[in-house]
Length: 240
Image (cartoon, rainbow, N blue to C red):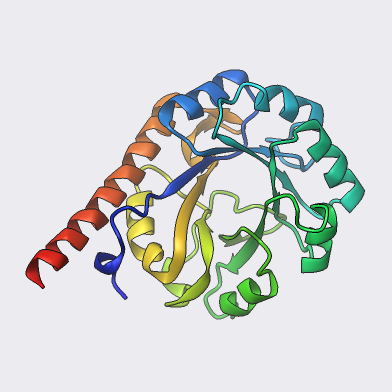
């Protein structure tokens, strides 16, 4: 299935992750982000406490979703942080099992995403179809590069490694920038039920410090991809 067969109404959702400052939250909202992410993983240079995440999430207007990112945190810690940010979705970016994800989201009553860490070494196999099936209660599967530690580290994996058909909503992450996100969307969207994109280091001028111009450029590049796919669909239908 090519990108041209996708409906033009299928807009790519955008998450700006790793926010630490009020002005960065404002910039993401003004640019048109659908979600913003707060990293509650202490080793990260973008780490914020649950209290700080709550302060930043309070700046969000309706229909912009805060997302709390955790790495191998006990369920009790995740549930406590979610009490501070009641509207938040949860992103699990460690080695959490499906059962642990459900326990940390009150039995799945809170929306959650599960990160799939795709090896940069293409000789190392990764069965995304099976991974998505095991985490079928997740709202989406976030595909990121597997690097030392946790998180993508600003690295992009080879998108052509993804299976041609995954019965899941996917979030493309890892090494995205305004320069490559259009190509990423065109390559990956035909492979899944729907696609969102997640960016952090690609819109920064320092770790944990976002660049508003890069955020706007990133959003514009995503919209350019959507427009390109819509034109392809229209051309296909016109020729039929």
